[in-house]
Image (cartoon, rainbow, N blue to C red; front, top):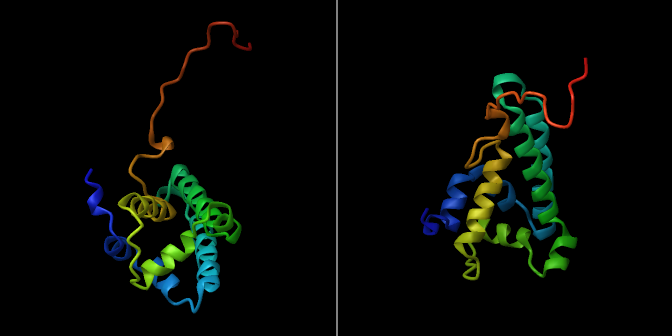
Length: 143
């Protein structure tokens, strides 16, 4: 995979709703609040989907990505790492230049946002059909 495909423009184009939510913020703290609420809405929205709409793995993926987004968006995370993901996303949403951000950063955010939608580069484990394993070895079956 060519890492050059991950750019701020492509990130905005593939996630217009997310970046509209961030762009509408009046300041960084409002952007942070909007990201946290977005994670909550995406997770709660997935909880309402059942059956063929979304697999168990899809639910888990959304939950895990929502947790990751919440943790990355916290002010304490900014302080601990010396880097603000929220600031970077707000700048991307507002088309501000961030030359220090690499395609790896954009790829990470791209897959995080895909995960929030229940999608990802690989199939979820609940799609993999495992064969039954016969009892044996040290443990005897209960009869």
